[in-house]
Image (cartoon, helix red, strand yellow):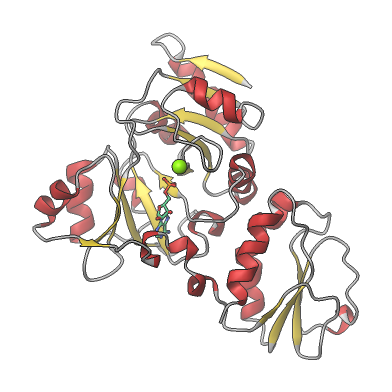
Length: 321
Ligand code: AMP
Ligand code: MG
C-alpha cells in the first residue's frame, strides 16, 4: 500500500497514480469533506465487489456514485427541475441525490444493488480531482470495516484496510466528519433518506417544500435492504443439487448439478469459483435468467465465506416472494 501525503508538490503525481490504480480495478482511499471514502471505478463490477470484500459487509447495499460535476452526473441520473436546483445550490458538497438511473449509465449493477435508481454526489477536494482525471464515477462508501465508525483520518483507514487498498491519499482530517445527507427524488415527493452534512432545512428552503421523513424501521431508509426490491418474477430455489424440467440454472464453480444439461437456461456466477467475480455477476445474471422464459430458477450452493455471505444474503432476498 502507498500512503501519499498530499501537498502542492505531490498532488499532480498522486492523482495520476490513483487514476492508474483505479483503472487497474484496485481500491483507493480518498479524503472527501465528509469522511475518507473507499473508492472503486463504478463501472468495474469486480472492483466494486472488492469494496464489499474489504469492508466485510454482509450485504450488497447500494453505494453512492461520486462524480466530478453536474455535467458528469447527467450521464448517470435523470435530472428534473428539483435535482437541477439542489445540484446548483449544494454541489460540490455533502448532499447525495437519489435519481432515476439514466439509460446506458456507465455504472455497474452492483453499485446500484440492481435498483433502477442511482445515488449521486459531487465531493469537494482531491477526490473530485481524481474523478475528473479518471473521467467517470467512483463508487465510494466510508473507508472503514463494516460496523466500525467512519474514518476522518488517513491513519484510521490504514489501520483497518491497509491490506486491501493500493493507495491512501492523505489530506489530513476531514472537514465535515459527517456523512452526506441523502435525498431521494425518485417519487413525486422529495424524501430524506439519511440526515447528514447538509441540514434538511436548507434542502427544504431551496426546494420550497418539506421533505418526507422516513420513519424508523421504514424500508425506504435502506432501499438496498428491502426484500421485494430483490425479487425476480420467477421463483428461486436455493442450494439446488438438481434441475427440474423448465427450470433455469444459476450455478457456481464446478458444482455437480444433475440435469444441468437439460436446464432451460444456464449461467455460471464464476466458472473458476472466484467469489469476487461471482459478486460482480449476481445482479446481472439473475436479471438475464428472470427473462429467459424458464418457469423457475434453481441456484447451486454458494460458499458462505468471504463475499459468499453477501451473495447468499442477496439470493435469499431474491427468493422471498
Ligand atoms: P453510504 O453508506 O454512505 O455509501 O450510503 C449508501 C446509502 O445511500 C444506501 O444505504 C442508501 O440509503 C443510499 N443509496 C445509495 N444508492 C442508492 C440507490 N441507487 N437508490 C436508493 N438509495 C441509494
Ligand atoms: Mg459507513
